[in-house]
Length: 470
Image (tube, rainbow, N blue to C red; front, side, top):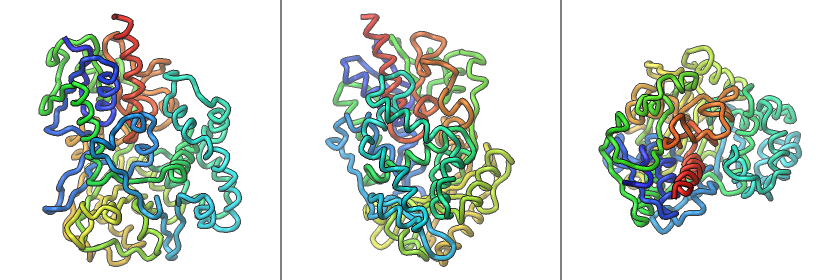
């Protein structure tokens, strides 16, 4: 009998397995696909030699993750690569704002009327980043705050809607950048705690950057898997779990799955029926015959580039996908160009490019043309660089990763009380109706992102139970 069996080898499932194995528990991990990775994979999706990330690509929360930073992942091949600028946001007139490692450089890109307001917003938190991100990502009640004063101040600033936070800015560049940062979690700009999302991403850029992993996001998963094997953990791929009887006997079971999948497998009936999934995404991976021809010069040296003309256009795109049940005419897009820092991702002189826009849950249309029309606004001649493309709408994303219900890459809507209280109203969100069954996916706090903290937090609940049994 194993001490713990983990189902799902995404970053959270792998992290949960590693944390338990580090503490001397016997662990076996089961994954339905033929490789580990979940939302952190790398594959040849277009042409031979072009290595694409089917889901996550840039990792501002990964490099800052307290869970990852406590593990020797560099020994297992993980290397973070940083571009000159963590993020750039071009505008239709050929200018751009940036998130640079330097607060001063970032503030200057917003213009003289907002530079001081931006510095006053971020500078009080930056010296406390390591404790703040640990406290923020360990909630709720998985660990006592190390710096409750800073955490409380952050909450007062970030819990209101992002539109409240951006009232301190007078001009559009700063408002637009923050709107784009909020859109990373596919939340309407007027939603609860959206100010915190924008602020966390901005602070992450200044504190540790927005890197990519050398060789692709698969390197993160492979590093976790390599460490788990060295700790004595077992990994079984091509093993789909449809019911609990498919798994070997164990004292605890940990699921890196959606809540609805867990309810189906464990026989929990309608326990998670009130859990809501959010908007989906339409994603395109490109093989390019050279770099993206951005009009502005700043995006040419940034791995991540946000695409949206202004905050109103970004807000309209989010409302269309999440509330109006239609695809936006001018989608807001997050794009990543890893080849500018990692030449191993494509043949010499070529590049890979990653882009997605928001669409309604389960949408079956084709957003390729609106995406490329948006790109042409900021990079005229983009289509001429395209050698091949691979497109994935919500149905295709859900097939590739069962956690992406309706194409929701966050495994749950970031809205209302579900922002903080997911997947159920509970002080122990990682537990379930069965005392030996736990959930550790992005449906639990702190939510979406390749950071492993949901797995880390869930592992704490598991080892407390296992330690008590001993």
